[in-house]
Length: 93
Image (tube, rainbow, N blue to C red; front, side):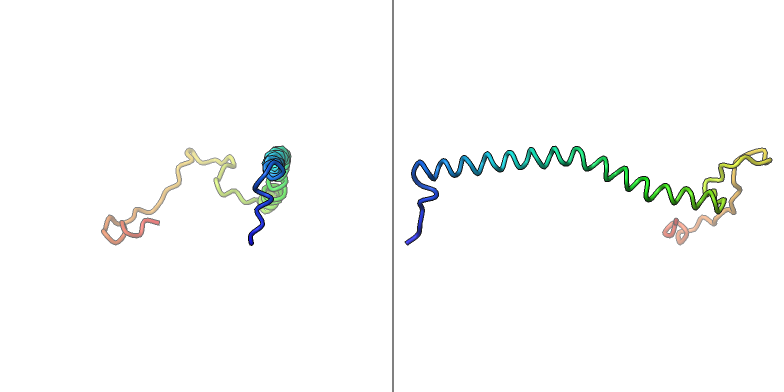
């Protein structure tokens, strides 16, 4: 025989209501924790990843965007023209 005492009778319904309320409180607790923890995690990732990367690139004088002032009259970078062929169109990058 299968025991259905948990689902039947006033005690069983109370148990289901209790578990539902417990679940709702648990979800609210998780949301409250997430509101606090997520910004902290994002801040730590930002500081621990981008901070050292910026420090290393400034020490190595690496400027991938070529933002340093120069004596050039323009910031335009001259490129070699590529042939306009079907094969070049298939391999654009």
